Length: 148
Image (cartoon, rainbow, N blue to C red; front, side, top):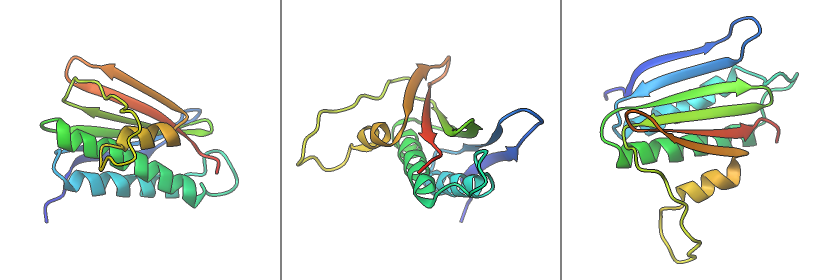
């Protein structure tokens, strides 16, 4: 089985700076599982400035958000994508870059709709959501509170 991670960095911390980790993926479907694993491993190694480990529900929510963002990158953007995870104060900042410059759109609630609920899930779980076009593709940045 071929690994989807092209490069992995982290976790890193310098005095007075935030903790971060990142990876670049080839955009194949294995990238999704690799990104979820990186997220779980990263959060297992940090406490978010608290004496207690990050709650399991927060880790699960972060993995869900990463899974949705990387799935969309693999499904709709040709080529590689990148994931960056960073602890900023009491939040986990998740950033995903992909090669598709089209902006994601939240769809109206449709109880009978199967699939295409990723952005709805992300908006429900995250404290903040920001999308910016880049010279190549786009960068989506979300914030997940580290408290339960």
